[in-house]
Image (cartoon, rainbow, N blue to C red; front, side, top):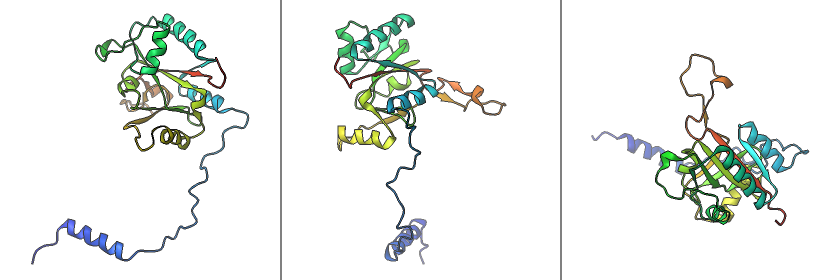
Length: 224
C-alpha cells in the first residue's frame, strides 16, 4: 500500500475544513472604529505632525509658500556647502531649474552624493512619518544619501495611516506603486552588538540609511 505523503495529508485536512464549516463566533467585532486615541484637541494636524516628526530627530522647516521654500532651501545648501544634491523627480527638477539651484540628475557617481531631495505621498500626523513610493523616486534616494530632504505640502498631512492609503488609492487606483515605505526620521538601529543594556545611548544613527532627515512643509492652503 502506497504511503500517504505530507502534501496529501494537508490537502485532506483542507477538504475536510471546507466541507464542515463552523459558524463565526465573533460576529459582533467592530472593525471600523478607530483603535487609536484621538489626537490632542489643541493641536492641528500640522502641529501634531511636526511634534512627532521632530521627536524622531527629524528637522522640520515650515514654509509659507513655494518662494519661501526656495529661499530656505538655498540657505540650507549654502550652509552645508553641498555640491552633489541628487534629484530624480521631474516636478522637483523643474522647480530647482527655474531658480538655478544645482542638482545631479544622473544616476552615476552615487558615491559622491551628499544629499537627496524627494517628494512624498503623504505625511502622517499621528506618527510623524512620511509615506514615499516608487512612483516618483527610486528607493535609492531614500536610503543611500547621508541626508534625505523631503518636500511635502500642508494638504498632504493626514491623521492616520489609513488616510494615507486613501490618498494612494485616489491617486493611483489599481496601479498602486510597487514600493510604499513609511519613514520616521533618520535611520536608527539598536542591532549593533553591545554588552550594555539597550537604551537611547545605544541607538546608532545612520547605520542602515540616512543619518539626517529634513522636511520642508509648504503651506499650499493659500495663494502665493
